Amino acid sequence: MTGPVPLGRRTFASDNWSGVHPLVMEAIVRANDGTHTPSYGADPWTTEATGLLVDHFGPGTEAYFAFNGTGTNVVGLQSLVRPHEAIICAVGSHIDVDECGAPERFLGSKLLTVATPDGKLTPDLAALAVTGVGDEHHVQARVVSITQSTEVGTVYTVDEIVALSEWAHSQDMFLHLDGARIANAAAALGVDFGAFGQQSGVDVVSFGGTKNGAMGAEAVITFRSESDTGLRFVRKQSMQLSSKMRFAAAQFVALLTDDLWLRNAQHANAMAQRLGSVASAVPGVKLAYPVQANGVFAVLPPAVTKALQAAYPFYVWDARSGVVRWMTSFDTTEDDVDRFAGQLGELMSQQA
Image 1 (cartoon, rainbow, N blue to C red):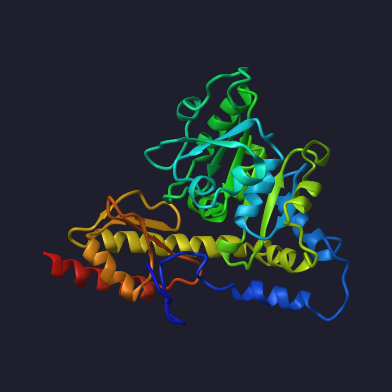
Image 2 (spheres, one colour):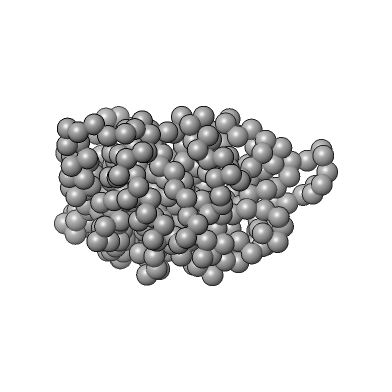
């Protein structure tokens, strides 16, 4: 996918391409009521948003709001790892391929990547990356980082996360969860996103709001004390401390009130299920991974991909295998899906 995209066009490129949910935008406007408010999080919106996150994740939860997913991952991981220590992650994970080397650059830590069949690490797979324990000539594996939902749209069950956390802790390691799409995973499993926190043994969560209808609003969630993590200082030094934090916090208040986060995620997931169903019914189209959250991965002929992108921008996931990625969001409509699938069917029929 290259070149500018005309304004107003609907796409399946990314849930980052969608706008801000109207109720979230209203919350931002209400926070901009003309009064002066203490900065750097000393405001009532940040207090309320933090309290709502504690309600979901449980007592002992600490939340640190940030600007973006990469920054949130770097800040969260920095609270767990030192430069001579390493982070185990899946090949193709966001910290591996989509953060321009930011974890290595700012943490000074090596990423130990492990190939997976479905984007998900297991204790056995993670163990493959652990070598040279106690040997000063080798980096020491210290953190296992997983993504929920994964980069290929699959979802870890709670039991799978528990198994990973128990293994990691038995090895004197931590478990980090990149939750850019944590809401979609929770909706898919029918659980609260708190199930992916200390309940399942996760040590730090990068909590995503942007892909769930917010605007540049993310958070680091930790279940370790600030005296252990130094997160207040890490966030500032990592340039993720917002002076006017109330505008990020207000978005979380909106998302976490009356389950707006859940409604947004359920809708996006339902549209992905619809898209996966109608697309896989088109002769010649094969799904590369099961549709479990709000991502659909399909294998297409290159000519079809190019022609379809001209009408509906989306990303090629793996050019060698022909796998493409279609993402749905809170504002995707059934008509969007059906029109897209209709055009896909026409193009595929021309290849027959």
